[in-house]
Length: 460
Image (cartoon, rainbow, N blue to C red; front, side, top):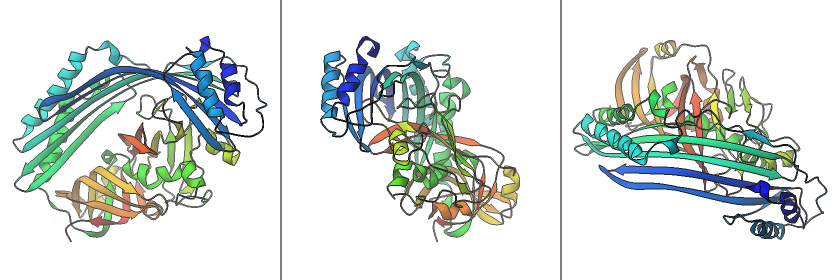
């Protein structure tokens, strides 16, 4: 579409009043969303959308405007609107486009748009029935199916022309179980940069049973004991810890503004020597993966922490310009209606050498966290609080009875320094990460971890 227009003229218009950089971002995609709640299909949304955003960076500030009127006249007007927000020296760069770089995306075996809507609805209904039939105590079930396919084209004042396509599918089941005045929730997600073949690995019924089993099991669990104790985070728990306790704090915009506990800490020890943290957008089919980010920078595997030492941050073009370095390919946006900002992709604590079994066997008294729930973190001081949706007591190296209502409270750098063992396994979790009003798909992963001491919120 953009190739039909004089994009050099549009970029020159965007930089008419000055600026160091400008780009045009075109996006066209289709999506389907189905929600089943309380046994009824509550929502079926299917549609397409396309639009263009134009950005100008001047004096390390951003002007951004967007439209869904895809005509050359409209884009020239849009570029004029963006240019009016900046003042500076005339741009002296080259506008000639170089040969385009294209990425068709990871191989998709069964594109979602080839699957009839009726089949998608039937899949959601099957999960709903399965969860409800699991146990009479299951009182409410919510099932979500969502897919999307998008093609992006990016042209900028450096002469770069990048094409990129992405397809993603996500499926979640949430079950609520109740017995007397006790209410517990079980949640299980599935998703990735995949098409409908996603369900060849795990069926909708399996996802439903996992969510329902978790909710029902927690009904009979006693309240978790509170206090300071050892905690084993299973690889099955997902990567909530790495995402919240350190991931956001290593996004360069927060670090540069002094809003991160890791600001100015490059080269210092911020975690146990056993801990290495990477952000890797190149993992095939992982939910946060891509070939080019939303600014056209190539995806990378970025080492953030190596053997406990902070090596660097995640950058987009703007934050990289501020430090005179290059982007790490972490410029992401929810859609053409929003400017790109620094975001994680797939953030991982790298596996170690200890077997998960030996880690548990070495704990005299503690808590095994099999599944993490929601959480929050203050990136300025690193303090966090996470919910535990599936946890078990550990007594003398043996996993015992389940407990409910546990929370983990601590400080990111402090807790990361207290990691005493790192397992040889690796488990992934998926989610949609929110920041500055934007949501983007991400994945997190960690091995089994032993935290020597952390505060567990519970009964007493």
